[in-house]
Amino acid sequence: MKLDSTLANFLKPNKKEITRILSAIKRYDRIAVFRHAMPDFDALGSQMGLATWLKDNFPNKEIHVLGDNHVTFTPRLYPEMDRLPEEWFKEPFLAIILDTANTSRISDPRWKKAKFKIKIDHHPEVEKYGKVQVVRTDACAAAEILTDILLSFKGNYVLSKQAASYLYSGIAGDSGRFQYSSTSKASFITASYLLEAGIDLSEVYNKMYQKKLDDLKVTAYILNHFSVSEHGVAYYVLEDKIQKELNITTERGKENVNLFSNIEGINAWCSITEDPKDNCWRVSIRSKGKAINGVAAKWEGGGHAQASGAKINNLSQLPAFIKDLDDLFLEK
Image (cartoon, rainbow, N blue to C red):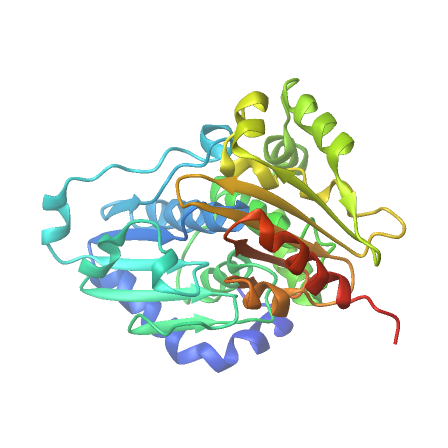
């Protein structure tokens, strides 16, 4: 397949690394695909998209996906993760780690046992790891980079409808359905290649954003308990007790954060969800204009300009955190 010139130019700086990726895939008969813990659409979409592509094109290799399952995406949108005994990791294998900037976030520490490691990511680089790295912060999703890499491989390789559907979900999820500023011309071109594989957009989006009747109770609670700061930062707080009453998990606390994305006068919005397991409060932040990843970094997090995550240790820190966001939108 002849790759569009826009995509080819994006990949050009990583041409040597991409050649090494294909070489490693051919060399190893046992391949494990990893990504970050508490996965989102991009982590799972890129992971399952790559694993499916590998199985389609290298049917004689042993391919596995590792990590934690998602509380709602599994098995609605993505299959369950593989469960492997420790013995499996004693023989040489290739580890491909996706959508993860630093090793502490990789879901399943056994990636360390791999003979050869590859990192493919779109986050600002926090930590170098792996013998091969392809990091492109200009991409809206790891799935975008991965798709471009797979399309660029020289050889008679197929991109099945199933693999394309998974990859598309990663791109659509991390770009906010192509609304975030990280979306580029290349993002749309990459998506167009996936459409050519015959994916059903209605089916993909229905599975991605399907809700249950009980989910309306969560939405109703948030709409009755949110706050807005002086300069347009909207936020809601979900204590552990409230999560239990609403029958949701900590991971699901951020699912309604984009309720505030198109409201006039709201400049940034976030969810603050108690995580009793780690004794902290998980924060998911979004913005329609100003970059919020600097504030996220100050609060033990990071991410993208308009979509980041952070952490506060207790609710006494919440006013200071909201003030940091609020200050971004002071008129100058």
